[in-house]
Amino acid sequence: MAIQRMDNVGIVVEDLDAAIAFFRELGMELEGKGEVQGGFAEQCTGLEGTHCEIAMLRTPDGHSRLELAKYLSPALIDAPRDRPHNVLGTHRVMFAVDDVEDTVARLRPLGGELVGSIARFEDTYLLCYLRGPDGVIVGLAEELGGKS
Image (cartoon, rainbow, N blue to C red; front, side, top):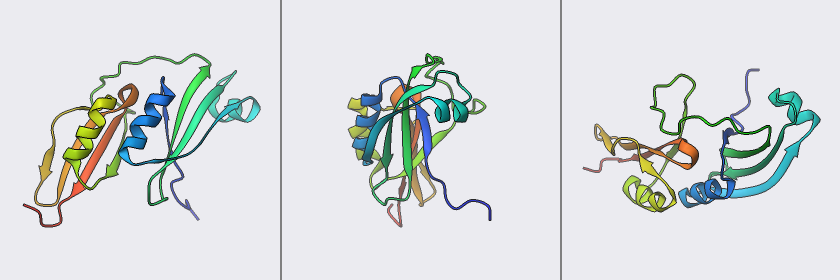
């Protein structure tokens, strides 16, 4: 057997509370918060002295999760937060939403900033990318289903 499912996507953030607020406004539900450190964390990450605060959020359907991690040690390695989408290794997290424009409007006060603009793909989707906490690129997709 190959894989059973995708369990979660992990994102390192500087301000855990702000990131939680952003993704909760998007509609995710906070499963819990905690700290990880020591042996297994060091072994898994390959980083000596690993100590993180983490939060696990899930989508309303319960099928996808996002793990936010704030490193207490070792120190964060800061990178430009305005990286373009085509940088090697850069990724985005895409969410299906009911209303792209409303979602963007609700996320703006929490730091959400459009990367480009809201685009229409044929008569199928409205799509956009926006920067969320710490420069993370978040994609939003609204299925049009015959809307014009």
